[in-house]
Amino acid sequence: MLFKKSDQLKALRAVPLFASMSDRDLKAVLAGCREELYSDGQAIVREGQPGGPFFLLIEGQAKLTIGGKVKKTYGPGSYFGEIAMIDKGPRSATIVAAGNVKALAIASWDFLALCEQDFKIAHKVMMGLAAQVRSLDKTAGH
Image (tube, rainbow, N blue to C red; front, side, top):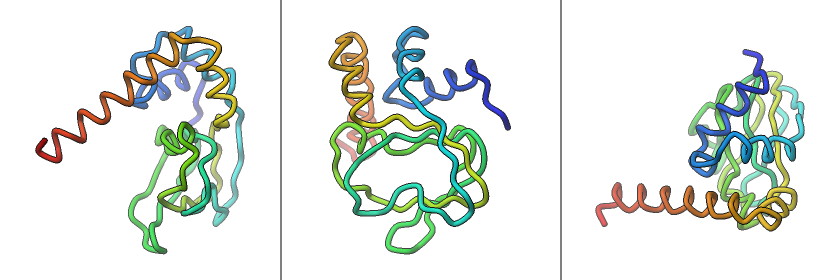
């Protein structure tokens, strides 16, 4: 599946962190993204490493492992790293390319600079985080 710019915007909007953003906001986020290529078996991120980029897979598949055990397979439209991009905390899992992978990546410093330049975007990010916390609270029975 090949992602056009309109598909990339739609895929970004599916990420809870970006869900309330306008097309203009999403285009600003997309402008800070770069395409990265990974080959079969190559680690995209490693468990325990300090934060870093957010990734949105646009081609291929990747396997998420925790403690060396495969927990999930990602495909086009899947994403990871949204929290590590913000707090620079350690990665909670290793993600390895399963075949050739093309991903959009946005570095934490680029994303945080965008949030600093445009408070409306920063506020929408906060709203996305708040929605995720509320959702987790509901599933935890709070």
